[in-house]
Length: 261
Image (cartoon, rainbow, N blue to C red; front, side, top):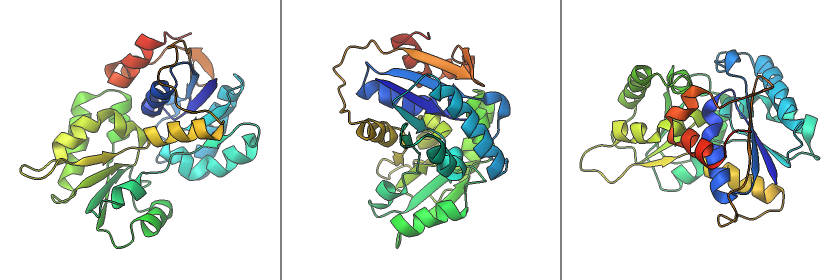
């Protein structure tokens, strides 16, 4: 089994680790193009073109599924990616986990990039899945870039700024950018209020990993042999995992279990 994941940068690590947990025997192809970051301020046409390029690079390795492990690419490029690759290659997009977060009754905060915050796409999801629930959209300028480059001071500053915009009574936070899942513990620590029940964070990695298996007719088999390979593509070229990826638990886990081929 071979599953490809694409993202602008290292935000795909969370979903890749989730796939690895479910199927340690799966070969993974991680395709990104960090030299083109950030994608948030780019036009939808630019994002679509960049997404198609890194998806084409991944498709050359003949995966059975392609996970678009990037919220920005899912918002702008998913129709073009599906038109290009399906039905031969199932394409699985990443949707902010607003539905499960709202099912708890709220209040809910959605942390996302400034481009996604307030967008028709996100507002549509709120109307569909969180009607009647108190929802606060929280823009997080600079957080994705800080995570990408493992800039500790910039991460702390961006998390603190977003936490200051988050109402103190929220019970759940939706991580509306895949990069944010890599610093989930720091977000929880910044938002958790003393004396209140533990804050629930909702990422998308587990859901997209499970959906990818469903789309190709496979089941989770965490007991399978841990012999899946790891192929890294940066700008379409074979490479090692970026050094910044190894500062996160997910990157180190992938490197330790499956040395880069």
